[in-house]
Length: 395
Image 1 (cartoon, helix red, strand yellow):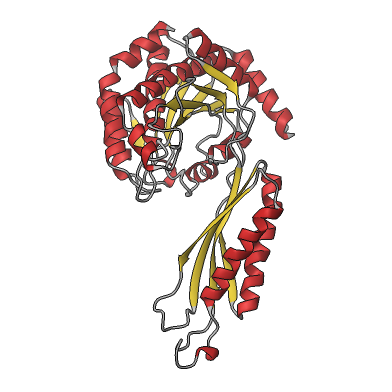
Image 2 (image 1 turned 135 degrees about the horizontal axis):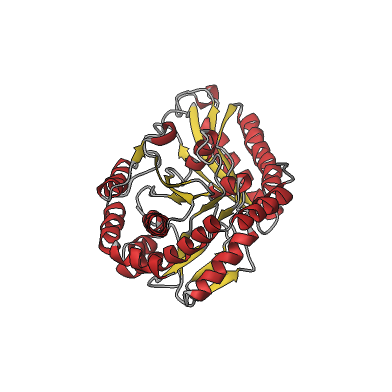
C-alpha cells in the first residue's frame, strides 16, 4: 500500500532520532522513563493525544486513533539489559511499532477507514512481565488483534513470519541458615551458601534428565558477606524454559525439589519468590498467512516458519493466549555468525542505520497486515473463531 510507504518515509528522520535516543540511553525494566518520554513527546508533537503512565504503570503509555469498527494494537517494547544495554534490540521494536502505528493512523484518517488503532507502550519484557500486568489491568480488553515483532541476527533472508518462543518460569530462591565464625567454630553454623551451591549443582545434573528442547539456567545472586563468616542468607535465581506451559510446570516442580533437597541437606530453610510464567507464543495462523502475503507483495524475503522453536521467551506469549496475535522476527546484519541476542555485538548492530532500515521495512508489512484486519470484518470474525478453537474458549 503506497500510503504506508509514504507515511514511513515522511517520518523516517524523526523515527531515526527516536531509535537513537532509546538505543543510546538504555534503561532497565519499569525504569524506562527517558524512552517513555521520548516516544510520548514525538507523538504529541505530531498532534496525537497520549495517555502517559497508562494502566498504573509509570513507563507505559497509550495512544489511539479512529472510531467504530475493529481495534488493533501495536506493542512497543523499550527496556534494556544490565551492562549490555539494547543487546536484545528493543529500540528497534519500539521504532517499528511506532512506525506501523503512524502509517495505520494516517491511513485511517486519510482514507476515512472505520476502525481503531492503538500504540501501547509495554515496559519490562526482560523479566518484569509488563504485558502480564497490562493484561491484568485490562489494556487488551476489546482488542481484535495485537501485533509486534522482534529483531534477530542474519542476512540471508529478511525475517520469519511465524517465530516461535518457549514458555518460561522462574524464581528467586532464598536460603537461610545460621552464621558462625568460619575459622573458630564453623560447626556452629548452617551454611546457606552450601545450600545454594548444592541447589545449583542439582540443577546442573538435572539438565541431562530433561527433554532436549528444555532449558535450565541459574545464577547465585547473593553468596554471603565475608569469607570468615558462615553465610546465613544466600539467593539463587533460576529460569526454566520448555516448549509448552504444561511441560514447563512439570520441570519447574523438579527444579523446586533440587532447591528443597539442597536446603534440607545443609540444615537451612528455603523460600521461593515466583515470577509470573511467560507462556509460549501461540500466534494466529491467519495473521501469519496475512503477514506473509504482504511481505511477498512488498518484495521482502520472509520465510513462513522455522523448523525449530527459539530458546527465547516473551510475555507476548501471554498476550497470544488471550487474543489473536502476531510476533514475526525481522533480521538485522551482525558482524559474525557467533553473535546473537544478549551479546555485546548485537547491541552494536541494533544501533546501526541498516538495522533501523530493516525495522522500517518490517513495520511496513506489519502496518499492511493491521490495516487488512481493520478493513475486513469477516477476517476479524475468523481470527476469533480460530482463537476460540485453539484455546477451547466460548464467545
